[in-house]
Length: 257
Image (cartoon, rainbow, N blue to C red):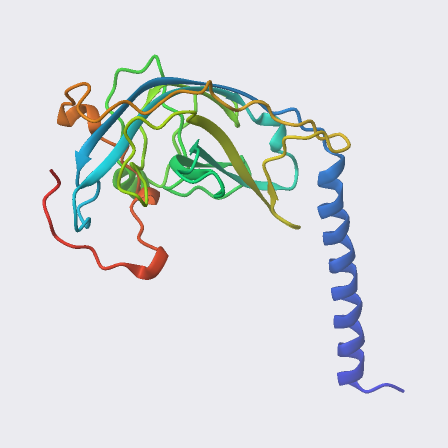
């Protein structure tokens, strides 16, 4: 006759075994869900100016401000096991030395949540092209605890003249006249259960590689080639776009030039 403690241990062991088995099956089932992502990226405007790209910058340097158009259909990335997709746009350009890998800089990102994920104010809400009403602030939405509805299905984006969230800087401090620059779309899928998956460019089973996803090559213009107004260099505001993580830098309170 087993004691009560032994019986509880047996029940708990059986429960954890069943839970682990079910979670494994759910995680593996994601790989049999077909994926056919596609995207079209085009450059709208690029400007290179010299100044302090951030309020905590300690010196003046050249930085680039890029606006772009994006039409993407990533709806097939969402299945029964998808919680959210971290989407980002990066600029890729050759390094100054041939022996070094190309430089990459993220200029825009967004969190695309599935319909089953709990609402968060940092989730991306697609702007309604037909709406002329002012966008409601994150603070008001959080107070009302309501999630704005997107005009398109989850995973479908149609952005025109999109402002970047981040300015591009280079370790050399110079960006003018750099050539062979491309914009590239990337993502990271976070499932409810299982491993994270990143952008795939090749066909893997029922997963098709990303069609498109890269813009045509362009060049950073010379500094001062076109006078830039302060309004033209504004970045998109978002609560997820104002974090200092790397090195935990302490911001310097200096005016942006």
